[in-house]
Length: 328
Image 1 (cartoon, rainbow, N blue to C red):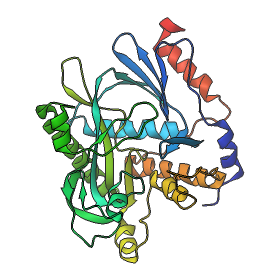
Image 2: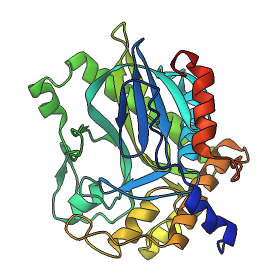
Image 3: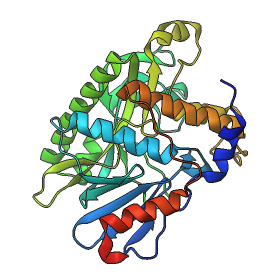
Image 4: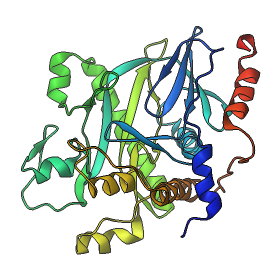
């Protein structure tokens, strides 16, 4: 679909800054601006900033709202599988959450041999590695090939500005990053969440290819899933009907996720060695439309775009003032 003039104008109205001096405990991640509140609550505001290869590269129209509302759908659909950190949603871009003691590993569940980052299965396999994250792989596999079963491939959680790194189950247990009981529960919870995700995605003609989970401990020491879940930033989604034909022809399956942007970047440069070029407006609009299409296909709801005549910062500030009047 050819972008309209109004689509390009949206690029000038993206939310790139959600810092409000009235609120305490501000800190900034690549995509979210957040606030540590003194009563074991945390405020997460999803901006339209877009990262890839551990860099913030651009702003994408509606990105923050899509992430928040997609995660909301999945938190609602999986709360019987694993408790989550959500308290409330004061605004389409905002979620109020429990302040957890975050665990120092990320759990990535994968069911296909794919990916373009240096921690992805395909990138490592293509370099000749056959033992990945402690799992042995046979010779002769092809990119995007389905694995025999879903596997857990954990990574370390980087410090601010750092990079995540592969780690194995034995290394986690040897270094006591988490207790054995916590580790085995994390694996069980992650595989159960992934199974639910694949089940619901399949009903909408989608393949949940892989995803990342982050977990923390609540005030009672219970494991709770946090951050986001099954969003196009943290997961790969393929259109199921395109998979087999594309796989057999050696092409990339049609996707509705962040991999679209990663593949564009890899086609322009080596993102780990070269400066990443400016992303064309047409590419950012197409990317935005993919995220919206995923939300609508998954939820069956029409995505409600915000009024472009209303300042997003002003709208969010008003929502914050209603939610936290003691600070405004």
